[in-house]
Each structure stands twice: as structure tokens, then as C-alpha cells.
Image (cartoon, rainbow, N blue to C red; front, side, top):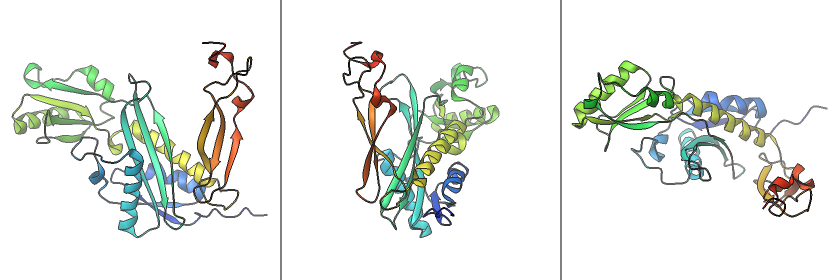
Length: 288
């Protein structure tokens, strides 16, 4: 017997982006869902930029959904995709820089919004203020360039305040020197700021993380609700409290996952492997 077609099979979704994200999102959607994805060129920078010219007002989730809707409005499609990245100190480990990438699908026919995310802690990023008058031949500390992953990863040169003289997407040492000279000339200051260009089309590491997030979303969309067959059956909540294998005291380890439907009320609780008992090293009683 032939397996039933996925509800998205043969359909087209618009991906709102100006930063070359189609190769990162499209393949997973095609492979898991037979869903075709096309680029919708809309001004996603109007919702916020990494360089700070436009401040992001909403949460990453709200911004990703707003991006998808921009693309849907521009293209007239009922299926929209978008991504949003947040890069900064991790909430629980502030000494680490975390890259959180969200990918969302908005389906107006079903009235659902589904997203998945991926976090990476190895993202190259750097920023420093450079006094051009104190450098030899506009030289830049090699450690800064190494931390930024330059030249594969792009750089931005900007003044310490404002955007007069800003140059983005720098991938070449000569181009970097010219950008520093231009910034100094147009801003009237010998001190310029050099920082990572975190836009996806200038940051290869971000592209890998976005692609992983897109694959997670595609895998989730491929799972249909056992009750109503809506795409996106997946984990909505997790319950901690897996028992210690020695004393059976509750720990902080996840004991079950609640699978939920994005459309109907159907839910199922699925125990994790840890529900049978976890190593006493995680037990607040055995290992206080």
C-alpha cells in the first residue's frame, strides 16, 4: 500500500530573506515534506539588524513570525517561512557566546505557527575599538581577526557612534584597510570599531546552525498528529523529576515529554529513558 502524501507535498512556501537563506532551509523542506520553497525578497532588516541601525523590538520568536508574514503578504502565499538569530552571552553560562537560530513556518490555512531552534556555542565573533593613529599601516590585531574567523567570516567597520562611514561585508585585508580609512575620514575620529558581520550571507558558521534548525523543523512538520493529521506533532513541554536509581528521589533530569498538536487539543505524554532511573550523581539527596 502506498503511504499517504504529506499535507504539504507539492505545495510552495515563501521564505522571507535577503540574506541567501534558501540553500539553508529549502533542502530539508523538500527532503522531508516534498515542500517547495522559494525566496521572497522583502525588507526583513526593517524588523531589526545585527549592526543596530534598526533595533529589534519583539522577541526572536515574534520577529521570525513577523518576517514570515511579511513574505506572505508580499507573495500572496498562505505558507510562509522565516528565520531569526540571536547572538550573545548565554543565559546560564554568560562566559559563552550562544547562537540561537529559530526557523518558523506560518500556515494560515490551518491557523498554525510551528518553529524549532538550534543553539551553537562555537560561533566565531569578535569586536574591538581600534585607534588608527596608534597602529602601523592600519594594522589590526591578528588575534581579533582570528577570533572573528576572518576572512571567511565577514567584518564590519563603523564609528563608535552613529553609522556615518559604516562598511559591512568585509572579507579582504585590503578592503578592511580601505574601510578603516573611509570610516576615519567620514566620522572625523581616529578610533573605529571593528566587529563581526553576523548576517547569514557573511557568516558561514551561522549558516550551518540555521540549516540544522531548518532540518529540525522539517522533521517535526513531517510528523502528523495521530488525531487530526495536522503537521507538526512534537514536544511542547517537558517534565523534570526523573527518579534517582538508588533512592528514587526526584532529580532535575527530564522524566517525560508532552507531545502536542498545533491545531487540536490532542496530547500524549511519553516517558524518557531517564524515567526508569538516573545516575545518583544527579541526585540532590545522594550527591547534595
